[in-house]
Image (cartoon, rainbow, N blue to C red; front, side, top):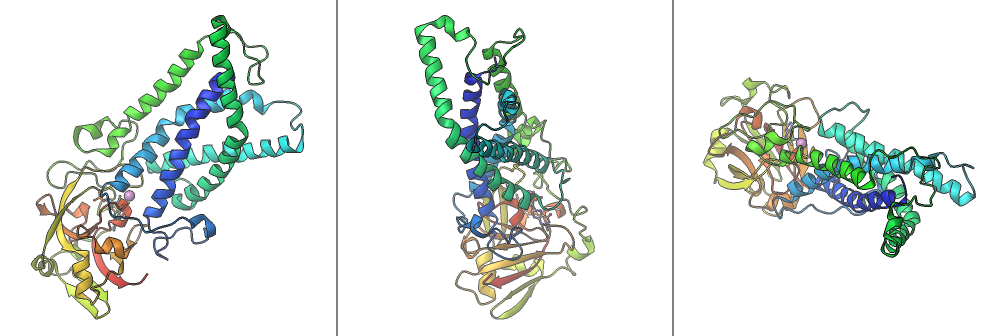
Length: 404
Ligand SMILES: Nc1nc2c(c(=O)[nH]1)N[C@H]1C(S)=C(S)[C@@H](COP(=O)(O)O)O[C@H]1N2
Ligand SMILES: [Mo]
């Protein structure tokens, strides 16, 4: 069963899959506005690795939901393929002599980065999806640098191996066409175990096992991208947070107010005030004041880096560009949004001018026809089309417009 055909097929699946993971991963990184220093940037020393960064667009409004859904769901689905591929090449690990030439030695060292990188990326990714922040340092930093190391080794590996994989597949197909009985003959390759035990499963059976395992993982995680009964099918990747319940606020809650340490006394009518700062100084607004400004609605999802997202929710509130205009920015300006929250990672986030300018970008006061629930950010939260959930700051206390 172990042999060039098995390895080549799995390798080509991974070639396509990992390339998609890398591209969606880089896009996800760009979506965080990591150039809006210092708040959004966890990797200030990225140097040329940030060469491709661009202003993340606000169209189509489901862009991040799709990108991150593909990144996380595909990553989970590829786990059995990755493990099977590693298993299929285990004999290579023990080839003697360990290095036949300098080129061979370099190739084997690159495998360390390739295999180590793959295990590192898949492990940190899965842990993040499961909210298990057991690793030292920021997930963001580890997964970003890990991706570059892994992908560099991956590119080198593909350049070295793709011709062999394609040649093997072509040769095997030709042999099978000539003499069908050859298809079941042992193949001649150092991937083949010299003294194999009696096979207990056919190669087709092995592909079925890998594909079936992938399908099972897919079916038990894709539901994270939807609300309602579909979400219940995400058995393997529960969010672990509180059940959002039903009603207008009945969609996924990331961090509850209690978890974020929000003091409810600070959110009440007489205490809470939004401070908006800009060219013309400070403006203070109560929730009542905000409700008297022109209100607009937008149907937008929340889409988290962890790969879960909600369907579109109806948000109503004040346009960010109207708030910018209140403090002297009729032209687009960036904004730093700060929460009431005092501790924790997501208490502030910066948005770019193009995000502020979009008429659907709101400081939301209501959702689905009711005032925001405390867990969804009452008295006011940010909602921006196509942006990652982490930029949608909850329990907003202060907004500072200007060039960031
Ligand atoms: N103040 C504050 N805002 C926050 C967060 C937070 O922990 N604190 N979490 C962010 C993240 S990571 C996401 S995905 C969304 C989730 O919004 P929801 O809980 O309403 O679904 O809120 C964002 N806003
Ligand atoms: Mo998130």
